[in-house]
Amino acid sequence: MQVNLKDRIALVTGASRGIGRSISMALAQAGAHVIITSRNVEQLQKVEKEIGGNATVIPADLSAHDDVDALFDLITDREGRLDILVNNAAIGLWGHLVDFSISDFDKIIKLNVRGLYLCCQRAMKLMIPQKSGYIINISSVVGFKGYPNQSAYTASKHAVMGITKSLAVEAREHNIQVSAIQPGGVETDFAFEARPDLDPSILIKPEDIAQSVLFLLSLSDRAWVDQIYVRRRNGTPFVGV
Image (spheres, one colour):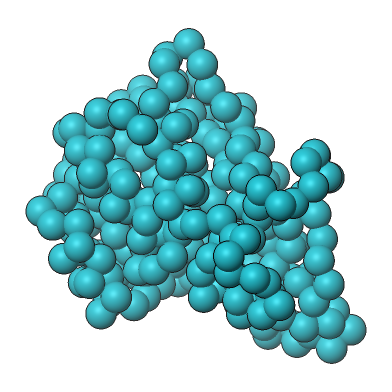
């Protein structure tokens, strides 16, 4: 997909593997300078090498408020602006609701919801003076559906959709566009941890989600898309939509 992001500054969270890695590479190939972050420094450095000169590694644990502040302070000091934020960082822990530990529930909410919320806050503080920007939240099919053994993760992705919907209205007056992408089963380690029964041959590729991000960024100033649900081709159309 043709989109020119030359001179744009992008931040991708959860960028060390899977969907985040693919999004980071696609943004860099389109000309953006991409700041990549996650807790895994070694994997981030591998992604940086794959991207080449258009990437900067800033490790951070987004479940820690101080790390979020340090990340955005560095971006502010080094770049002075932020044009694109892709909130992809998330964890999933699985189990029956009746047996699920509250400490595991809190871990999921702390990163998937609180961490995303904090990143949106800090990004908005950079984007509002610019009167421009894009915030794209990677949600999930479980942002509107439910699967067994995924109650905590599902709760977090419903929360992501709530944040996205409210922020989209708030951001509009500042010429900042906010959207969510809701992937179905994507061929990542994360997906197989949740659903070991999935057949890899029928899954969405991480690159497909990256293309959805580029699609949003390619839209003219007359159009926007609030949310994109990307399903597996062998899935049932319009289920739960």
